[in-house]
Image (tube, rainbow, N blue to C red; front, side, top):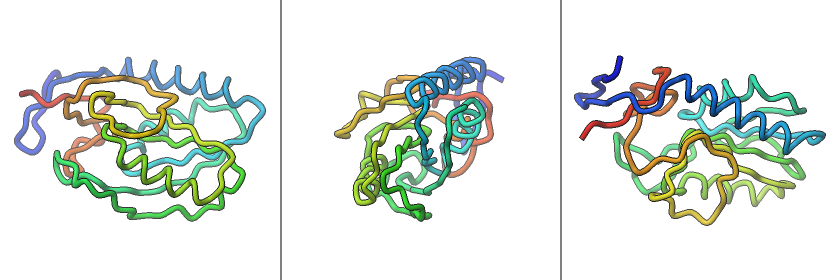
Length: 178
């Protein structure tokens, strides 16, 4: 399946599942090495990061816990410019090493919101692990230490990424065909 139709838009295969699996394994290996001997709390950003997080966490072999927050900033294919917290942070993270797991970092608004929440909790450290990073769209003031793919500003779906909730369950990532 090299192209699909979602919400009356055509998407073409962009990143194959085999490439995704390799990137995820590589990210997990780096995290395992960097955090060897340390305890980590993985903070998964829902809904988009659920597939990436599940695959990544299966490869993690350090002492860790997992927690979740749910944010929303998109309506269809457009960012609303405002980040809403739909399920909040309810875990005590004081003095914890936190790794945020995100599906995609584009403008950085959602991540800036999460980082400000974490600053209030006095965490020991925070790193960001994102499957996709869009440096040309990025306007944040933070570093994405771990990322699987750096892409330009295309709209993509699949492997957790969606358009109005559709296409999340695809095993590959598809790009909007212009």
